[in-house]
Amino acid sequence: MFEERRQRPPGRNEACWCGSGKKYKKCHLSSDRSLPPRQVAYRPRVRSGPSIKNAAQIAGIRTAGSLTRDILDLLETRVEAGVTTNDVDRWVSDELRKNGARAATLGYKGYPKSCCTSLNEVICHGIPEDRVFLDGDIVNIDVTSILEGYYGDASRMYLIGNVSSEARRLVEVTRECLERGMAQVRHGGYLGDIGHAIQSHAESHGFSVVRAFVGHGTGVDFHEEPQVPHFGRRGHGAPMIAGTVFTIEPMINAGRYDIKILADGWTAVTVDGSLSAQWEHTVLVTEEGYEALTV
Ligand code: MF3
Ligand code: CO
Ligand code: CO
Image (cartoon, rainbow, N blue to C red; front, side, top):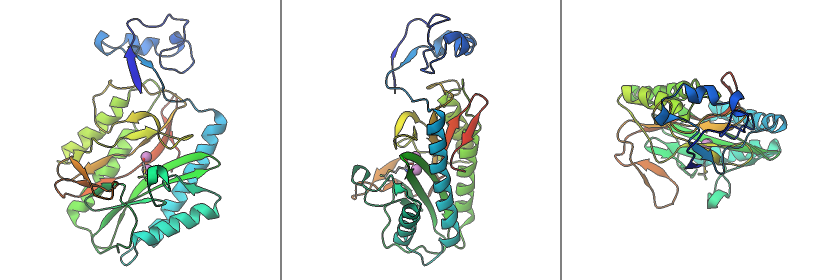
């Protein structure tokens, strides 16, 4: 989280304000100078800022991310009408165990299952149960593997049988939102660039961006700094720093963005009952752009 505001930029040879460990002149000096004074990025100072991963950590997160991808791939071959969300949970749990991994969600703040299964008007954090997939359902399945202590967090949409064209369009546009958000990732950019790309695309299709849940730093812990909003303004928000790892996971509603949480304390649904879709990847920020760690 970025708190406190600096009045002055660091000296040229002092450490950059962003926490990269580089000298200011080698890091954000030129990009700060190109911004209007009210937007200058040196104003925020890192408190408990995003952590920069070393090569071993990045390799570990990449391996955990590949396992998550493999599990989501396997589900593509199995998820169909007649299967229950508990079946999905058991398959995820079995695959994790077979690979010497475990589910980050199981026992997380009391969450009872190894994945989230969020159907139709469920935005996220749907709990697997004996609900059977029916023709026309859309479902997000979200898996976070912990392998050798490293986290790989990703989710996809799965379409069951004959899905309405409106639901298909929501799923497709949400996927494009993730891709457009990822295309903004590079050292020296701002988290607002990601949010803006996602929000403008979703809203241009008449959809809305959920505000209550955001992407997050990840890799060594499940949820790290920074928070990654899927809405925002270009050039605003926290700066992106090479070597940091975070998720982008837009939740897009066909209707209003407002949410409510069901009595189970987890399941988040659209207040207006409209459909919701989500896609998620974990990405590494690089000097040139990004590397997706869950593809
Ligand atoms: N994997 C989800 C995310 O993308 C978090 C699920 S937390 C849970 O951040 F406890 F609800 F499972
Ligand atoms: Co996530
Ligand atoms: Co997730």
